[in-house]
Length: 183
Image (cartoon, rainbow, N blue to C red; front, side):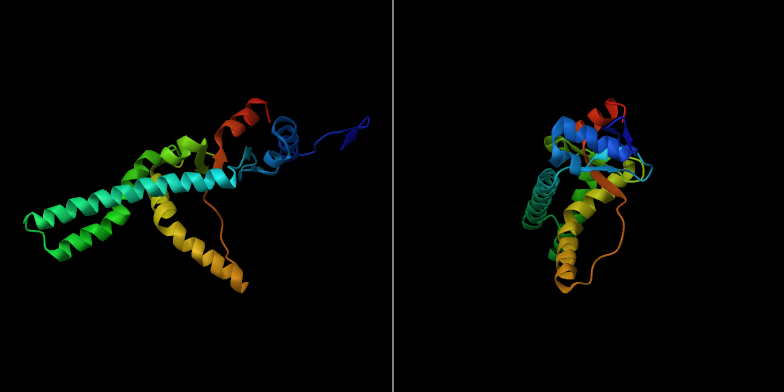
């Protein structure tokens, strides 16, 4: 809408994008979106999302490695664990370790998010993910590589993937500044 020759944004999203472009540039303005309730936010960039996942996956992989070493030592030390029990416990550690690490994720900020300045929030309203953080961490570290393969395969075959996100990753500082500006 134009008032006396000045373009004014007609929606809250347009106002947020205009502010972001003025404050941070066109690249960040392209990452402005709205939660399901209409509140604007700044999506985390692709590099930040990858680095967040990489750090969290590395921490989980290290934790699984420690579990496997401890289990191997218990088996070799004659502690009464059979090779089948050691194998079952080692495989289950691939799920237990990310769940335990996910307990740190209730506010959406595990180590990877802290280092990259991002936060995982509910796509519905931008709220905390709470106790679902345990499951979110398992999905991010165990199932994400599998899902990535499915998406690449479906894109290559032209089938597509349907669904919606329950959580999204935000640029914490930029979103806070956007809300601080009254948008």
